[in-house]
Length: 209
Image (cartoon, rainbow, N blue to C red; front, side, top):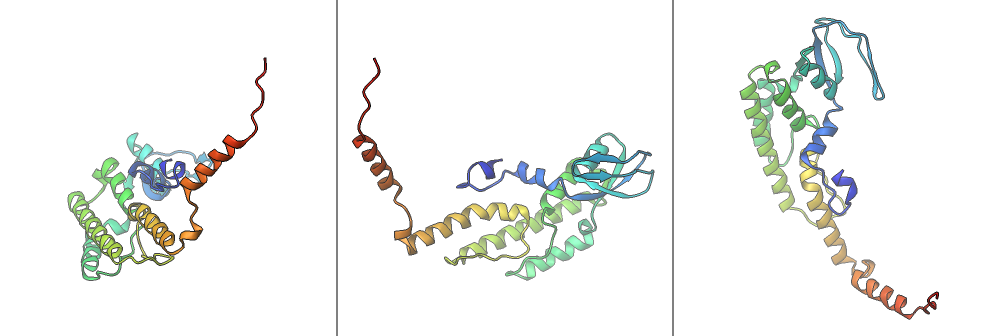
């Protein structure tokens, strides 16, 4: 993954964050009878017609694509709840409302694969987009007040929001630390030139004939 291969970037793509969200559990209503499914991550089932059960998102999507279940949207995705969350987000400029850590990715997966299972789908999508915009604006406002403290605490951020601010905060903290403790930051250019000189001063081996 991009975030693991380069620690200086430390950011995941939207697809990678969505991939991690697919391990979240979601409720489905099967329309068939099926024995339990055994995976490394756990056992799920048995599946009985019209009996709700919980499975990982990736399994729910796979069954949905094959016409073997309906997906029940989580309760927080109701129009009433999202309207209330949006109002509170707008009212409280310094605080973030509690939402699932992967609320952006979960809603996107449902819009892509189970839109027929979402009551008032267009209203729900509009409310989630508004909530996301308001929260991103609040994140940007919080970062404008950022001072070089050793820790940054912004409660109730989602995975997407953390992914956005992580690179900025990491670079900012490094810059503050470098400014306050210049003697503790190694001079990369000086170290590189010293290594080059040391290599040039080493005795050379005679070439084999």
